[in-house]
Image (cartoon, rainbow, N blue to C red):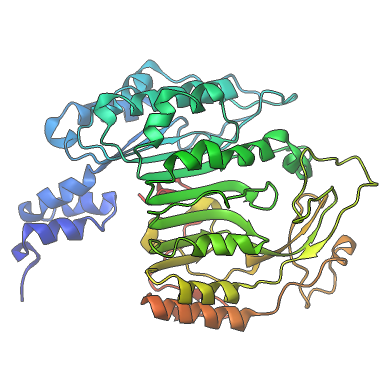
Length: 456
């Protein structure tokens, strides 16, 4: 029987590439023959956190030629893993050691991917009453420096950029800068996870913050249009649902080379969204829809336009304005059947729900029919207008929900259509109970880590 050590080096490197770093580190101790391949995986990615130990380790690897040449990705955190940013703390201070490392990440000669990870808690400049340590000024300053470093000559081989917990405020000093424009003009993979300020005393008013809609209005022209001609991998998610409110209109954007699309928390309310996905049929081979919901019944409490979208600015105090409820009649089985018949190159599909996109890698993202795949929207609902639709078996539902339609009863239709889709694309599947389906070997991760969302 052939031994592992008899395999060609190319296969050993391929095998170890599927391991996580702790497993690869243990494999290095097995024998000298596999140590080199495992070493390549152990040092393929590096993490910088604002603690002295992390900075020391970063500099050690950077200054050790044999280790530095193996680094392919770098994740830069502005807050420590165990840190909980509290209200009204002093503004974040990053040590000189952290800053020295941050400014030197382009020195890794083989670096191909880099991510900047902010705290998920943010505060807008107009907010009174509470502030978090990572102020708008702090984030703007660091983001501007990040793009300046990315545009340096040493960083020109970096083609994958991730910005996690990007506050939903665009600063023109950054977005109109040459650094920003030139970096977006060359990246092939862009991953953005958007953080929004939460109105903690009154969560229902979070949706009415001006930046909530303004950022989504600007997103296509500011972030997406500059990458549209060449991007191959796009990940876009937000900590709050988006698509309907705030409205994100992608009809003017097309990505002719898009191969992989990962969207999180997108709400489906109009046919154009499905048609927009299908329009990428020539190139799309991977589609991930996590925490995405069909909003089957919408009861606005503010003025809406001819398509049913809220007009902006909102007028939450005016009870006399005309609103118009509407229903979206497409169901997930309609989506799955369209994907099966009209996305001929699709080979990887994921749908499900996980907090904070907590999936370790693309191979472990869920295929799961969650109950929240159908939601209703009731404007002014507290503490959130996004409502898991009143279920037929729930006889004690809150009075304000009685005006909402029951959630669609189509578990079997959805499940069968999903199974047909997975069969068509050759993706393994295992039916389970209660209208759900999971891929074998998938491991649920309930604690949010940004490395997981980025697939590293």
